Image (cartoon, rainbow, N blue to C red; front, side, top):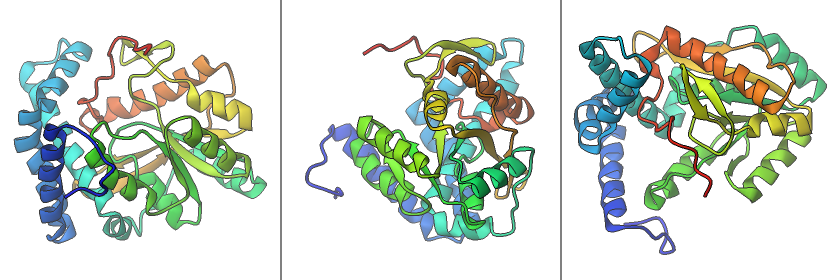
Length: 295
């Protein structure tokens, strides 16, 4: 029932993983468009209310948009959970996802900078957040010949993480698990002229940087690694389109080399601009404004 006898966790974690595996397995038997829509509905109407995700999203929306009518916040929270479900199954269906994106081309001021960096064999870090589908840009750029790795944060549920990690590492460039060894591997990859993606919009040790008008402790890893390796930092985003299945891939202009905090502020502002345009596409279910954790 589990991926390995070495995996340990609570009974609740095991049961949650079993249920999620069943849902993913059922969805993957459907045609691609139907499975994406089904997972959006399943998360928004079933899992999110039961797991408290929708309530958490509404709480965060009230923090950031206190003047917004309650009904509008509820609609945004619902749409956020729908996007969460769609993103989950898209990433588990990465071959079909790649086919769906086969005709999608990236755009934005960062594209020319990326092409020049590739020609110069200069490292590139793509900075992004849990917005739209954060794997859509990597899918498109991989198809265009860019070998893009990454550094991922393991899920708290060890049973779920076992198959989630396989999904993350089964295509594209080398993907490393967050931690001392993983970070060292990621840095070595960059120093060889490699490219990689890092997500920054989770609560972490680091300075309190304003995010959507509220202080949010933010890791400065992207900036620190970039400064150590002379990597170009390009914020990029996969913006879900109105049909719920297609994406616009946007590469912002490179981040100005500066202090780590100033660089992270610039990256944060790039994400804020996307959220302002498409507020339902950010993962409001994350505990982004938690108090700093020093342990």
